[in-house]
Amino acid sequence: MRERVSDDRHWCEGTSGFLRWAPKVFVVMAVAMYVSHWSHSLQFATVFLLLAFIHSRWLPWRFEIEDDGLLLLFPFGRRLFLNRSSSTVRIDVVGAMVYDGLRRRRFGYPLMDGILYQPGRESLLRAAFLDRGFLVT
Image: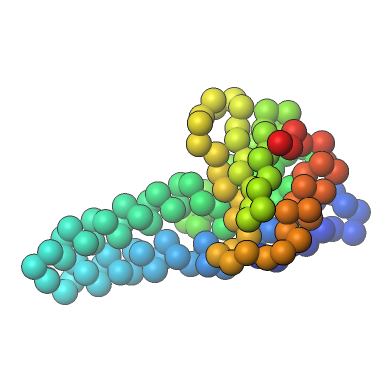
């Protein structure tokens, strides 16, 4: 994942290329399975479409940490803005999870650092969120 900080420190950005193109590959695989007319092609095509849907609704490929909140961008164009006052961030060794207090969901949105572990990423994410006043646990 790339992380950038603006010169005036108003926002911080993290992206993952894998999370951006993976659901599109699932859709292509679903079409290929359906067109192949294999004995179980409809079932496999449905599974790939379901994976693409879940991925596109839950795994943001890009996030921007701004002064007033967190902007999440999802693979098929969905955008979600979470206010700083209602969001809680849980930082772990391999990434972060953001929970929206307004929707009262038990499931959060993972802010993934790509698919591989990168040492020192935890402290960078923690500093970026704390600098902007997020509740970090």
